[in-house]
Length: 200
Ligand SMILES: N[C@@H](CCC(=O)N[C@@H](CS)C(=O)NCC(=O)O)C(=O)O
Image (cartoon, rainbow, N blue to C red):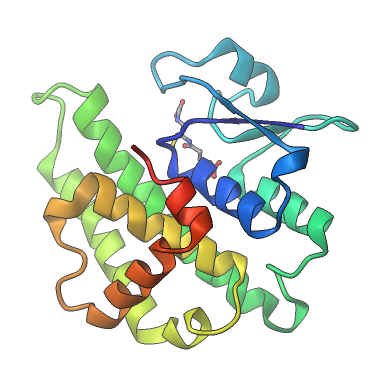
């Protein structure tokens, strides 16, 4: 199989960390592509009509896309430990919280990169940061018990989302007032799968 990805994409990073945590790197080749909202990579478009990464080209079925579909597929292939039945709804909600952080964080990134200063709206940016700040507080207040337990996809999604905030939006200071979550993020970032996929 081939994973179309960008080394800078936090969505692709979730899949790449899963591949390492579940020892599936021998079955999936990571293929780096360059795609953006203003210039979709034609190879990506064949696998995902929206032109976004990650997309997974499978050997025995149609290509699949959206990171959460791919992680679910690859986890099932490895035996299903990262979406445990007994805490499935909690894990999916934690994963969705992390995804919400990423969705708003990417909007902040793209606003700066693809829109001119005259087009940018401080209210829009602040509103998206407010979503991120609320989600970060929820992680600290409600989710640390699960995060301190056995590895799930919720852990990987949260680790990648917080690492992306460090990488692109450090100046906004998400760590301030969230000491326990920050300590968790630092410990998670030291896992080999995270270290190997750190954007350089
Ligand atoms: N919901 C998608 C989001 C993927 C996404 O937005 N990826 C970005 C890279 S971080 C991308 O491909 N952007 C190019 C574009 O928007 O056309 C997922 O979870 O896979």
